[in-house]
Length: 136
Length: 140
Image 1 (cartoon, each protein chain N blue to C red):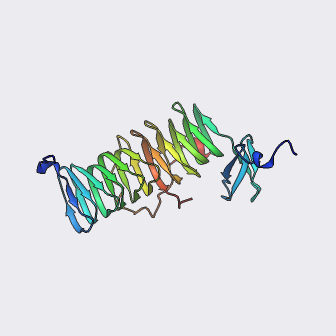
Image 2 (image 1 turned 90 degrees about the horizontal axis):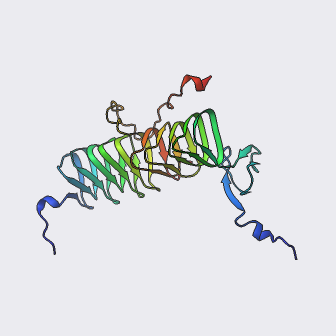
Image 3 (image 1 turned 30 degrees about the vertical axis):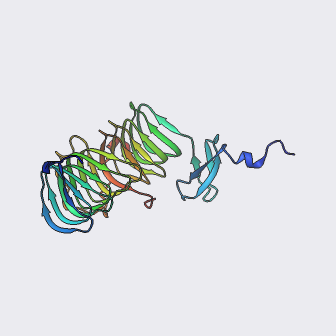
C-alpha cells in the first residue's frame, strides 16, 4: 500500500487558481510560489502579496491575494490579482478574478473589474466599475 | 396593533404600479413597481427587490435591492444590497456595497464627490471613460 494516498494529496494541499492571461482554471499546490500555466504556458505568480508602504510599480500581477494595508500607498498602471483587499490607498486600474474588499477609510482611484465588491463605510472610490459575475 | 401616524407611513409605489414622470417626497419613498423619470428629494429612496427604475435620482439616501438604470446622486449614503443590479453613474458621500451586488458605471464616492461637477449625460454603464491618469513618473 502506498504511503501517500493520491486522493489525500489532492485535498487541502491544493487550491484552484485562474490564469491571469488565458483565464483557464487549474489546481496548484498551496506551497507553490510560481507555476507555469498548463494551458498557455505563461509564468504565473501565485503567492499572496501584502504591501505596507509606498510603492510605485508598472504592474502588479499575482493569482493570489493582494493586500494593501492601512499604511500602504500603491501607484500602478495595471493590477491583476486573484482577489484584492484595500485598507490603504491605491491608484491604478484593477482586474481581479475574485472579490475586492475595500475597507472603511480606504481609497481606490482607478477602474475596477471584479466579480464581487464589498465596500466599507467611509471608503473613497473614483473610477469606472464593472462588478458582477459575468464581467470577467 | 400599534397605531401609526400618517407621517410614519412611507410613500409606496406598489408592485403592480408603473409611474412615468417626476416625483418628489419629504421622507421615504419605497418603490416596488416600475418607475421612469426623475426623483428629487431631501428624503430616503428605497428600491425593493422587485422594483425597477430608470431615472435620474437626487436624494439624501438610497438603498437598492432591485434594478436601477440612470444617474444617482446621494447627498449622504448609498447602499447596494446583495440583490441589486445597477447601471449608470453614481455620486455619493458614502457607499456600502454588499457582496453579490452587480453594477457597472462610473463611481465617485467620498466626502468631496458631490463637490465635483456632474459627469454629463448618463452613459448607462455602457461606455467607459479613459483610465485614471497615472503620474508622469509611472509612465517613463
